[in-house]
Image (cartoon, rainbow, N blue to C red; front, side, top):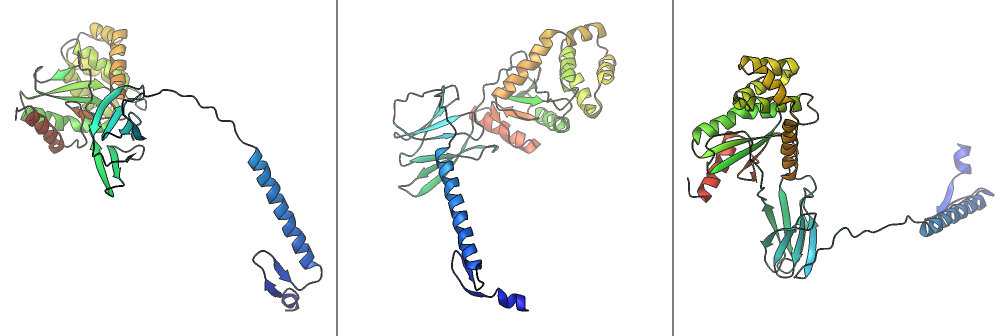
Length: 313
């Protein structure tokens, strides 16, 4: 108990605890002064030392109107520039004007959705009106489908383009839904196949090449269905077995499968996908618009929307 009495505080200051022990107060004061001096020296060093920053102007956008605010889209694919004329100019990273969006002239700032958001959303802020408008942007993609395998009439008014991977379980699962909507919309819709083999799937690229080789013998969709029925056990033997069961000319099949042009087609499909914003599989576009609901009902709703726009419903 004597120990507690010896170190009993008399009073306390916001910075130093004064204790009634001879020599302790002076020691505490010197220690506080030392800490303060050390902190001061540290701050002084920090203030004078800095990293050099080099600035490179990658591109300059020359506008005909006064820019008010800018934002980068959630996907990183677009640059938005708000002007004083009530417009949002949409640029690609290479400086090409992609589109112009009219907005209320009271809008004085814009904010994008957080990075990685599935939808392209732009928040339009008006300080004058004290409002925030939430604009969901839908960019229609121009996807090259020339020469790609398709099912349905070549001149169908609506084109469904799917980027897929033969080892993807979700891609296998969506095949019946696509067949269902094709059956329901005969003569109005065509389904276009594009390869997007994922690096995580060992045989996805080989399977893509095999399907394109089968296409050279008029058996793409039959082979396509067999691959998805076996998506979880694909290997070299399965690729060969499915071709044999379809009665394909195996010598030609092997030749076409290993043809550099076949690999080039797969590579081009993949690049087309990246350009359209594809990051995973399956990714579906209906007349260039990204489909966000892959259920039969969601696909049908997107088809109906396009048919209505074209007066074909």
